[in-house]
Image 1 (cartoon, rainbow, N blue to C red):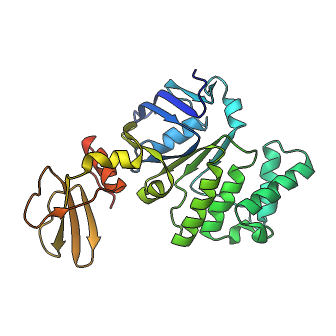
Image 2 (cartoon, rainbow, N blue to C red):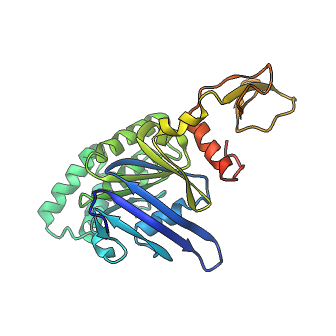
Image 3 (tube, one colour):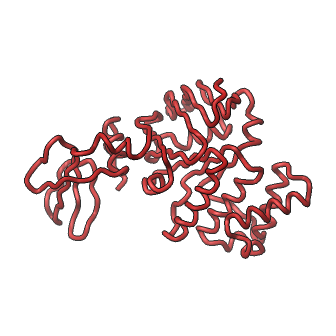
Length: 295
């Protein structure tokens, strides 16, 4: 195993008993900081997250965190792991502070004074100190996501896995949540799994695009967009007009904007389009033979 800092994944494969091949030889190097994992539903993101969190074993491959073999020493990874799932359950009537303290105790924080101090620090960090005595079930969606981060940060994890973190949040809560994640990433490997391109674009210096259980593109957002420079063309399609085959179709006032990939403009009505990460994402899926679009 390499002793390089961060997360190192090699040849990770997983096929379920029903024959679904969820992971097909995944290789990734994730340095400390925010790293995005982008892919459509069914791409294998959840399978990869579960495998990294030692909730299931792969059929083959290796995982190392800061040089430690995770598959050989899963308990060592669990001691350094924080995990924020898509949904967070809460016992009726239990306050945020009480629930955090119970979770901290379960993670081995048996010294009452230290436990209370850590919980108070985490509540302050995620801006929930004033709501600490309120029942968690009364929290808004954004407050729940920030509360989940506090739970995941108990014990100062080296690896933080965040699954679809901003689904359902309004813009203000999304921005607040992004700031918390960016702060955490100064000290840990933060793996952000999502199908929302904007989350990755706003937060991550590097990302991987996962489709069909394999990595189909990897790198910095600007590097992934570079091959599309000068090769994207956009045309506005009015309501009732035939919609052409396109890389990306988005609704606009009065119709649809079609973006196509070609060496030259397909017709006189097409104008040059500056590539974005969303374009790079769909281009990677198209190159991998996956033409379904989620827009």
